[in-house]
Image 1 (spheres, rainbow, N blue to C red):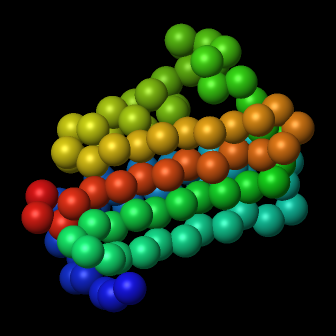
Image 2 (cartoon, rainbow, N blue to C red; image 1 turned 90 degrees about the vertical axis):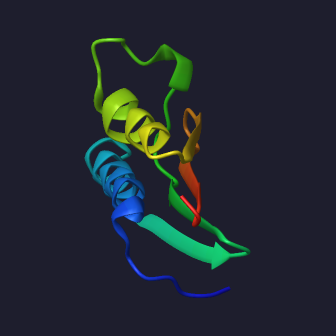
Length: 102
């Protein structure tokens, strides 16, 4: 594992991570939220996890744009990927991944 300087290319990834933390704080009901970032092999990965109430990812109302715009579209536009796994009653994990050569 290693370090990497904060570049303009990484800012959308960090913005999406911030939005994931804000969403967890507002909606999860969890008493704590975990954030983990790893830089290895030319890839940066960020994981935001809570053990809150979770939700049905496929059941999010299309009028709710927070996940779609502030997380998914933001990282896709930057050439990164985002995945959201959530189980009602068990919590949520947002995983963000970007190659550093972006």
